[in-house]
Image (cartoon, rainbow, N blue to C red; front, side, top):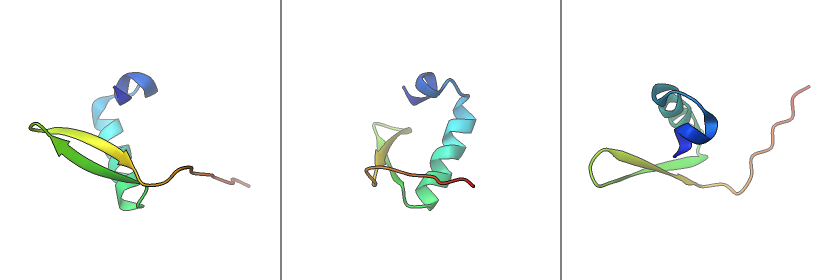
Length: 50
């Protein structure tokens, strides 16, 4: 589960996924009720911070 991998709280992970969705990096699919399944739309993300 993503929350366990990143050791974060569920609301924070949800907010992060919403930001990534708005930026076009992930698509959120629903399966069997409320469960959101993130699907990556990009192969790699590279950040250059100066």
